[in-house]
Structures are given as structure tokens and as C-alpha cells.
Image (cartoon, rainbow, N blue to C red):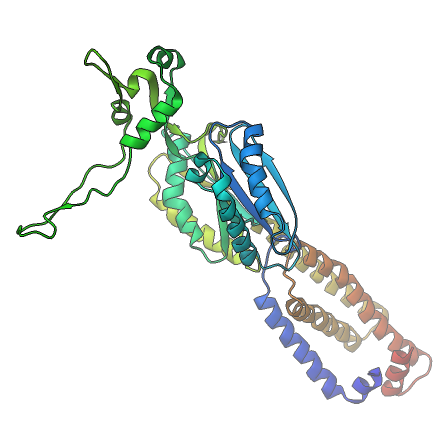
Length: 435
């Protein structure tokens, strides 16, 4: 299409410019905002725990069977794995770009289910999880006790019960990762005492499996002529260290009873002791909030901040919820920088065009072109599925200079025709655009 068409039909050109402006505004309103573009391949994170096992044992007993089962899952490109001496196993499965992460999670979970029969019973009891790994981190927050009235375990437990579930319900939040450990009843066996009684750890495990259970106890009076039917109830699993300590290990020949507290130290601790969290040198619990793909980071962070204010008002005395990092700070700074550069560009256009051409009309034309071009860019970004992120904002910063330069060049070319003797604005514009 020749430029002369728009010169001959200024109303058509104005309508197209207005349409571009409207589409750009619609795209700008609906574009997701995030820190980085979603260009990483979809990944599925498979995790398992083999308590008490070394890294080599975890590798042979857990990772190898899982890898053999997962290998070849649909659209998979490759996978990596790692094992630690704390008994944790991690497998990360990478998929081709464009693969539906939800479907990939289902496929991987099906493969994991097939492999569970070959895993140690200790691993299957805890469970093997497969979940999408969210790479877009929004915020890092911490709950800590400035007066040291609460320890790390209590804060972590309070966080998981009263804070994390409320944040997970915010639209656009993909995952909330708590960096800490849950409460656990720790039984520290005494090897010397156990040796005296001829006990091994499996004997203690057997006692726990027999006496510390939740079971269906049934009913009394069912299908009989009795007036009443009674449902039997019992307390179920033990909860305190004293109750665990009184578990009977063995009845001795002299009539005495050997209890768990006689062969072990029992305390309420954590699942593991491989992580310690401090905030300003005080006990704390830290968590990270991840973003789902295609969601608006600014809106999510604003919703989290609003919820955080409500949570702070409900916290017990001696607890403080603080922000450690927020993606919104980077995004706001980037957007502010784009606006700053745009304003500077407009001022430069006004100065350059008006000073050298001495025409208010010639100064007004490039200003319109700049707004139409830049706002229309957001319509294109929305159409191709891009987001407003640090890379696209950086591209806008670069292109502002090009748009400003082109607008000035076109106006200057028309003015040059007038300086060369042209009397007709139409003829001067046609020849200038033809050049």
C-alpha cells in the first residue's frame, strides 16, 4: 500500500490512527505484568524423602526407580536429579516449550504411581509428590519474633496454619514455598541401653505401628434387639511426649515393663534440622510467593499487601510480618523509567522541532505520531501473547528514540521541500514521503 493513499485520504488515516490508539489502550489494560517473560520450558518437580538414608542410598533406592519410570514421558526433553544426606530426593523433568504444564504434571504423576511399588515402604508412607515448578517469584516475606518470645518451630507452624492458606487463595498465586520444618515427635534411641535389652530400631518401629494408630473400632448393639446402638471411640494417636514415653516395649520376666522412655529420649522437635531461619538475628519463618503464568504481578502483589495488613492486625503480641523482597519494586521502577524517558523525548521533540522549524503545527504532528505508535505497540504485544516485563519495557525505552527520530525526519523532509521552493503542501508531502 502506497503512502500516497493516506495522503489523499486524511480521514481514513485519522480513523486508522484512532483505531490503533483504541486497540493499544485495550491491550495495555489487559496485558499481564510480570518481572520476566515466560520463556523457560515447563518443568515438573518430583520430590521424595527417605528418612535417615544417605545420598548414595537415596540415589539407588529412590531416584533410579523413579527415573526409569519417568523417562520417556510425553514431550519430555531431559531431566536432572539430586540426592542429599538428609534423605531427600529431587527430580526435575523438563518439557518442550509450549507443553501444557498441567497435563505434564498428570503424565509424570502417572509414571510415579507405577514406580511406587519398587520404592521402600518408608518413602511411600511419606509420599512422592509431583508438582509444577513456578519460576516467577513475586515476594519473599518473613514472620519473626522481635522479642524472642516464640521459636522458629512455632513461627513456622503458625505460618503454615494461619497465613499461607489465606495467601494461596489469592487469584494468580501459584505456590507458596515455606522455608522451614514442621513439628515432629522425635524419638532419639539410646544404642547402649537398647543393646542391653537386645533391641534394634525395627522393634521400636513395630511398637509404634501397633500401639500408635488410628483405627475403626466399630459399634455395639448393631442389628440386635437393643434399644440403643453405641459407637466405640478411642483416643487414637498419641500427642504428648509423656504418652509416647509410656508405650510398652516389652514385659520382663520379673513382672516389670520396659517402656519407650527407658530406651529413648523423646521430644517435640522438627522433621529435620537442616534449616535455620533468622530475621534481624531473631527467630523467624520465611516464605516465597510464586506467580502463575499469564497473571498480573502488580495486581497479585497489591492483593497480597492488602491481605498482609489484615494478617498483621490479627497477629499475637510478639510476632511481626515483614516484606523481604517484592518484584513490584523492580516493575514500578521500570515503568517509571519508561514514563520518564517518554516525557524527556516529548520535551526534546518540542524543543528541536519548534526551535529549528519555528512552527507550532510542525511541532504538534510528531507528538501525535509518538503517542499513536507507542500506545499501538501494546495492541501488538497483546496479540502475540507477550507480557509487560523488564525486557519489553527495555524494548520500549529503545524504540522511543527511533519513533521520535522518525517523526522529526518526516516533518523536516516536508519542511525541506518548502525551503526548496514548493508552494503546495500536498505536493511537498507527496514528494517528501516518496523520498
